[in-house]
Length: 519
Image 1: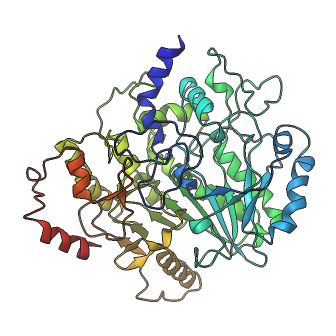
Image 2: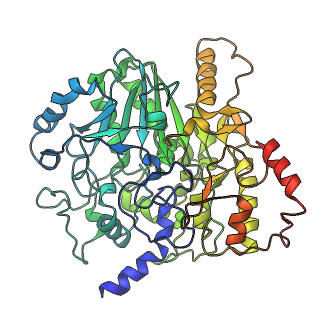
């Protein structure tokens, strides 16, 4: 029956939101786009219904006449004609314009052709490619649920003709001081495989799928969906050759949440592809909120379909469904069946040869939600509060050997596409500044020079508490829309501050001192 099935899915579906950012950001500049997939209650945080990696990437106002017909039928030439005809006008705007892949055999989950958005900056030899996030699906049930509720993450049929980026995707110098004058490429996530898939559905449909006409019979096997995330990245690179990517000096593959994990999984493959094309570009990675730790929850090792599946279990199952790939050097570290471990940055990082910059909140909300901890939820136990504190320490330890990192001690998820991304600091240095320092260091090393001193790019907060960095995004009561301090939030969630040693009367002065000096 339909009703029991939906109830079965809704409970564990929270685990699908790790890496995806389908929940709200609890900060003063959060923006909601798309549909909500979960009702909020109390002071629940969330920008429901959107990928956090694209939280501030808004659709343009350009009409979409004919877009669906172009991406579901006809030749590649006819599909690209409309986009090509508007490129000239696009040079006068800040919009990124949609281009469907020339290779129509590389598709989204539902068989509609994949694509990318491009904002060219003529004369620039720097390219910024961004992978959108949105977690994954790993079975017939989870994929059907995802398609019915978040179709834009599985189909290109509803994509707008233009998008306008924010944060590091902005083409305005005041919003993006060091990367505004680059060629910016936004790659929508429609493969549901954490950008790892390499294969089509084993049994191709008898007719081209038209947008949301995907077969939804309950007996449909999930393998009728295509999972081609890694192939989509490959084809985007190919389609950017006429745009000049072979002449690039720097190509930065970036992404948020699942897109950030996709960077870790694909950066070596992108570097190899460009090298084979004869490009001399240095390929770099920028991973935003895609550096996770394994779950501490005790679950059945044989997770039954969709119930009680940890992210690790989901990836184990999904890898087989997706025909997923991981970097060769990481795969060689683990025995057969343990390739899933390469989805975790702290296991994969040391095997990478391309330079990578890690951006990670020390108290990532999606990491907490996997442990059933919802900041702003109805209640929190003392054990959960202890887990939160330990999480910050564990993440710090996992980042110890990372060369380039920006890790504020805050409760949030994703950073680089936030419109206020320049305001967050660690030890007085903003993320754009840290990225500039990293860029200068890499260029110096590349040209056999000594990197300049006094320009830091290994920045991890030293304070131990969530929100102890004064530049953290604000915690907001979803009901009243009022900003709350961490202590106020903990009280609202039922914790006894005195039992935790957080007596606001006795410790007020020391807490204020910690906040002022910790970052």
